[in-house]
Image (cartoon, rainbow, N blue to C red; front, side, top):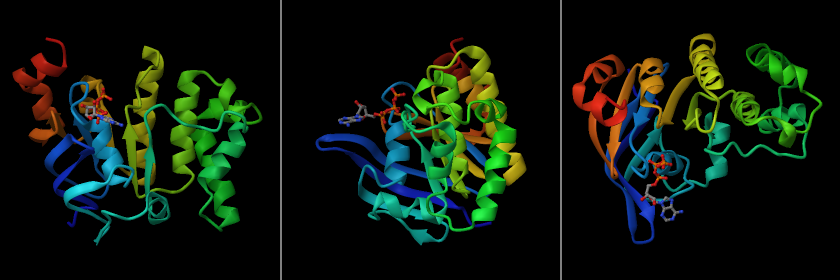
Amino acid sequence: MEPILELNNVSSGYGSIKALKGISLKVFPGEIVAIIGANGAGKSTTLMTICSIVSVDSGTINYDGQPIQGRAPETLPPLGLCQVPEGRRIFPRLTVEENLKLGAFYRQDRVEIEKDLENVYALFPILKERCKQEGGTLSGGEQQMLAIARALMSRPKLLLLDEPSLGLAPLFVQKIFEIINDINKKYGTTILLVEQNANLALQTAERAYVLETGKITMEDSASVLLDNPEIRKAYLGE
Ligand code: ATP
């Protein structure tokens, strides 16, 4: 099977700061893949580089059979590549439903959009209850759900999730990961997620990469990494 996403020796950064130093990774259709690593390892930078928000200094990024490095970021969601950035970034003055409909901005298929709206409401019943409420008045966890639900409205082939657990109460953290699993199983959406909560990330993903100061130092199936004493010591607080 061809990977849906392949990074080959990708370097990128911010001026003189080299945040990624030649990373290579592959994501295959239908997988959930996690990138784990400490603060500042370059996890967010990896996702932002894939989305062209941070530009590639060297190396190549292929998505769905074509090179995408150097493309304008706004050209990627119409190809099915969609990111939920860290910090949620919903529109606070728009209602929940308006936020969701904006996720379908590139689509013309009105009937299907209505169906997808019902599907995301089924996945996140709290959003249906709050559909007329302004996004900015939702709790942090609800805003995270709204950001993920909005991304789903674009019918992504590959969903990039940046720290879905960040700032959430423990109950919400568990719930978000259950929903990530559901999205993958129900819709076959491929997911690349970046997480500081290595434990949950490794329980949810099939494979994972370990990122340390801009380099990939390990890659394996998530269950093997979960059993690795070095990983347990460094990332699972043992
Ligand atoms: P965290 O989990 O703390 O968000 P991370 O693994 O996502 O960490 P990045 O945010 O990708 O790490 O940061 C990688 C490196 O790039 C860090 O050294 C960080 O200080 C630096 N960096 C990130 N954003 C910028 C920026 N806008 N300008 C300059 N340096 C940056």
